[in-house]
Structures are given as structure tokens and as C-alpha cells.
Length: 620
Image (cartoon, rainbow, N blue to C red; front, side, top):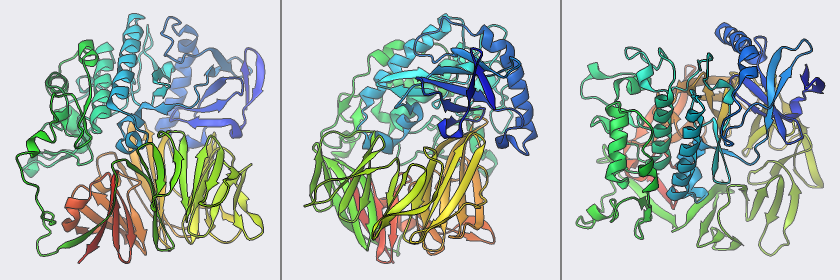
């Protein structure tokens, strides 16, 4: 398609695609700018979706008037449309804007694993929200409402928060007609519905409501309506998506608080009271700035938790209680679970892999990166831009498209790559549009992929990958030892904005997980595939609907089974009659796992990996 910027024709190349949302594709213009191109009704992503096609038509129609009238008096933290992109006839199809590089969506700051492995403190998060608070005030002073205010539209760069997707802002005669279910103000929605349905216009108060949701989930790793609601009476049960409409928050006595979340008693009484007032009593208004200004975080020397109290609220109540030595979980009486402590650190475990029946791991402690034998690889602080891959006794360190293999007693080996994976016998990487692996005589070619757009995973027998850019979407499998890729894999299309993806393998199956944001909702999906790419089964659900589905990096597969960690213990999932379901639970493991940990299943037992310890559970 030919696009015109300032009457100058430009070619849109799928290789330059750098992002994909529900409404638009983003392309790098290679001049410090990016092009946001709205999807038209005939875009492949909207195939067989008549409602989406109509919405795309309506959106483009509104933008013909809205974008030329876009306010210019917005604060610098708002990434605004700069040059309108049109077709030859002058119809607006999108716009160019500044390219923010090396950013992370604010969503990641509510992910405990991301925060811990990058040493992001509560004070850093507090400072981000002080910065954002100022921006929101300035946006409102310009008579603009953000409207669809959510943690994927906020990008963090060098401790500053930037607002993107400004084209959906509400101003003048142009209402914001989109919303994100997790952040929409329930006061604007139909209270009788089973999920948020917008019945009133966004307003500055609803922006502050969304701000408060984001702050709470970034401090506690749980949103106001998280946890599992288990009312005493079945008649009171409601869908998870209806909880905001009924104000059933994590403070409700019938809600089970998630184990990986931080207990809310770490917050100051004033802040906790504000969350109560906002989410249970419908208090609205500008978020009180003094609450942010007065936040001074203390770190407990004993348990390491950060809190806003004078004494640690976690340790203080425990001092008078003798620790229990019982290793039995609820419901596990008579079914003991043998627990072996494998490893513990005061630092943070970064990577664990089982290769050749040996448990390899990497951890960071006292400014040093160390392997399981205590070997020091590097000195320095944790860095969000550095990725690690374990390959036997060597560790591959990747940063900004360059990889170095570190092996004891050998000089560092450089590898040019954008993504590298390993199993027990080989390394696999992408270079210049090709998927390659180690061979006896050098690099071995596996197949062609789309450079800059491909994600892949590998295990002992086969691998799986996919790429999507603009109108292109391809999934593929490949053999771990042979050449060639099978790119006719028929998985449900990845729609909307991709937030996260992961793949878990046994020798017989792979379980491909995605988390996407579609029409304002977070959707979790899993597709089960055979090595030849045949689709066995698929399952999808909204965030919060299926408990074992939440942590896509936690499961481990063996034969036809997938073992997953939950707050109630380990569960076994499998495909039965084309349906993916839990077929067995292990309540005796409940004291040793939570929904945020990860598992590695072996014939000898199940390794459970937490942020600071590794246990081996041997089930009776």
C-alpha cells in the first residue's frame, strides 16, 4: 500500500513493523519516527469479524475530522500525532509520531517476577506515579480526558512515563468510545451486566480511577478485583468480570488473596483507606498528591519486604509465634509430600534449566551473577536489557542484539543474534532472517523466518515459533536435529495486542500460551500441538476466569500432561476428548507452591522454583 506523509510517498515494509495493537500496526520509519497505520475493514486481522470491520470503518471516518483538530497544548509526556498519513486521495489512514526506544509498558511494573529480576524498588514505582500524576493534571488542564487510560498505553523510559495512543483521547466534540475492562470506572457502566459495558462518557474522575487501579496493582501485584471470590452461598457467585460492578474487591472477606501478591498491610493506613474509599465506596476525584509525596519506603532487614510502616508488618506479628515444622498442606493428610531443599539465596534466581538430567541455574547475589557451582560469571547490577540462556556449563548473555557465550576456562565467544535459545545438545538463534543451530562443522540452516518479528522456543525433540507483522501471521514447528520448518501450523489467530507468549514442551506435545489484549479485555489462550504442527486442542478465557491459566511461564510438561502451579497446590492438566482440563490435583503440595512460581517435572520429582529458593517435591 502507498502511504503519503507531507505529500511524499513512502513504502510500508512488513520487515519494519515494530508493533501491533487491536486497531493499528506500527512501523519504524527509520528517521526517529514511527508510523501508526489504522487497520482498515479489509485487514486480515478482522477476517470473519463483522463487528470489528464495522468498528474499523467508523474509526477511520471519525479520524478524518478528529486528527486534524487534535489539541497541540498537551504536556511533553504525551506522544502526539505529528504528521498525518494519507492515501493518494488525501484520506487519513494514520500518522507519524516520535519513536520511543527501549521502553517497557507500565503493565510490567505490576509483574512481581519482572520487578524482582530487574531490582525495581517500590520507591522507583512511587516516583513513576508522581511523574504520571503531574502529566494527568496537565492533560486535564488542557480540557482533554485520556479516556482509555490503561497500562499498555503507558510506556516507561528512563524513569519517566509516556502516554501513547493519544488518538483515542477525548476532547471537544470527539468522545472516547473505547475502554479497557480492567481500568474502566464502574460508575460509567451498566451495574446489572456481567461485564463492564460503557453507558456514560469518560471524564477526568474516571482517569483518576484508572490511575488508582494502576498504582494499587503496581504496589501489591494484584488489582483491586484480583484473587478468587468464593462466596459461602452458591447463589451469590458471579462471573469474575462482574466483580468491579458489584464492588467485590480483594478486601472482601469471601475473596481469597493471591499468594504471590504482597499483603496489603505493608501500605500506610491513609493509602489503604483511600483504596477502600475508591473501590468500595465510589469516592472519586484527583488522586491526593500528599499520599504520593509522603510515601517513604522502608526495607525489612529480616524478610526483605518493602513497607510504609514504622516496623515490618510481616515480621512483627510473627515474632511471638513459633514457626511450624509441619510439611502437610490442606487436604494432604495421609498423603505426605517429601520436600528436599535444593538451593536458597538472599539474592534472586534468574534462570533455571534441566539439561542432561542436571539442574542448571543462574542467580544474582551481592552484585554478582553466579552459576549453580558458585562460579562468578559477571559482576554488576541487574539490568532489564540483559537476557540469559543456559547451555550446559556455559551461559549466553544477550544484550541489544549481541550475544556472548561465557564458559569457565575459555575465552568469551561472540554470536550475532536477536534471539537465542538452547536445549541440552545445541544452541538455536536467528541471524539475518534465518533460523540456525550449532552443527558439527559450523552453523546449520533450519529455515527462513521474518527478521525482527519472530519468537521461537526449543526443547529436546522439536521447536515451535511464530511471526506476525502487518498483515502477515505465520506459526511453525521444526525438528531439533533436522533442517526445514513446517509453516502450515493452524493455530487460532493471535488477535489484538500481544502482551506475552511462552511455549512448554514434552517429547510428544507443545503447549503454546499467549496473553493478548482484545477489545479492552485481557485474553489468555493455550494451543496444544504435536511435533508435526497438528492442533490437538485449544482453550481461551478472560483473565481471572481460569485460575491455572494465569502464570504462562510456570508450567512443565511430561508425556501428555502439563503440571501447573496454583495457590491451592500443583495441578495436572491434559487433553481429554478434545478438551483441555485439570485431571488431578495435589493438595499436599499447597504449602510449597504458589501461582507465581515455576515447575520442572522429572521422573525423580517436581522442582519448584521461587524467586529465592528451589525445592524438590517427591509425591507419594
